[in-house]
Length: 266
Image (cartoon, rainbow, N blue to C red; front, side, top):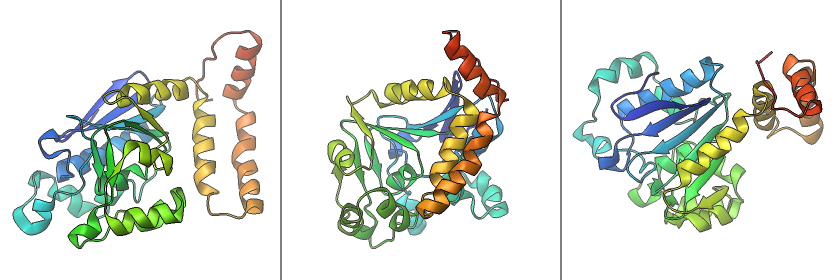
């Protein structure tokens, strides 16, 4: 497993846990963090024993966005990673899930601040669980900036446009309950328990057929902007092959035999 000084990686069974680990800066984005994140997504994609990913933050915060001190020209930690960024100028967008979609389900476990770039990364995740004290928001316009991590495109597709525009244009903070009410997150749990809840969801996903899970996720995203007719055709093309897999036969056999299935990605 990889990781950097600002991004820790660990396994919890079949789940890869990526932790933004710069608590002294409320996990503001840094070059080491972005490199670690991107490597984590690649690891999840490449390792078939990984069936889900949980993204969280250390020290009671998720992510407070870009390091504004670095943006103001005061330098950014992790100069040793500059060659990675030079070799792949798109690396930071891939790390933030703007230009990369992992094939495994990604579950966000949010505590504390999840603002600016944190809220933008959140929009690239699949399932979102927030502790009750979490704070969300896109603060860029308050600083005279633009939320260029994808929010003007993705947010209006994920929540009602009126809510998206209010969040984008006011730059105000949103509490966890309001974030859930407008659909930015799916569930609010007691403060401090978001990671536990996310791991529980991951375990439920991990118990399912991995080929089916990945095909379902792919179908949801690839058909999102299609007409219903085109989407239904694409769903059949994606879904029918799953019925011919050994895993599908194992699922039916395990149900008949009243036991837990043993899936082998076959």
